Length: 253
Image (cartoon, rainbow, N blue to C red; front, side, top):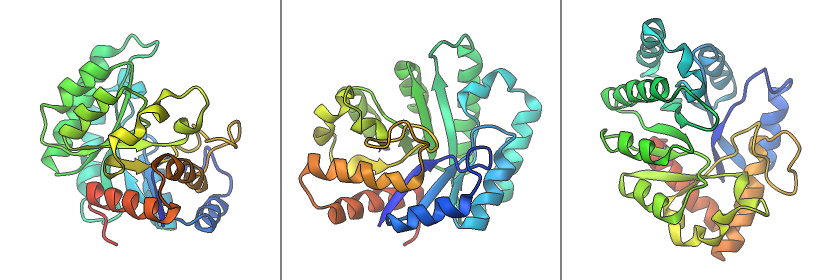
């Protein structure tokens, strides 16, 4: 069994979510974590996830930081509190920092800090987005007793080890299958015990389907690619990465 630990399954991206679920099941992707990215899509994420038996994460992406205000703080915390008793609610995410072409660094830091405080307060793991912001991300994460996943990791081996020391798993998706991705050169050093699989659907579609809209079913392609790098069977890779996912998100088998 495979798990897609990071997807965005919204009506905005998929006209037929039932078909997305069917495709995932046919490729043995039996569990999906559906991630919110703005305060405005949280209700849909909850609705879609409950209907289709997805797990879900609630949080605000750094690109939304320019809109961050007291009203948003209250709304987000209320959503979190109201979902604490739902076993499908497994994380706070997608949250983090994205400095690529952005001038909102201070706002992003404030937003991330607030959401890390919530994660610690409500004992929830986080799903972290970090793009061209490694040092600030690490310095902020170090301040909180929180575990989680570094989503769509593309940094150095040394950076990966730093995250792992803090109790984070490394999220690996379609990026690793790209010809120009250096991650494949040292991924085996990171160790499979520190890796979870993801798609970031509808983005980051793996080879040989790059150019098409991504779906959770394509976790299978990433898993096949990694099984060759680690020189183990697909079944064994699935067992290990699924166990990792269950551990970090406290998901029961």
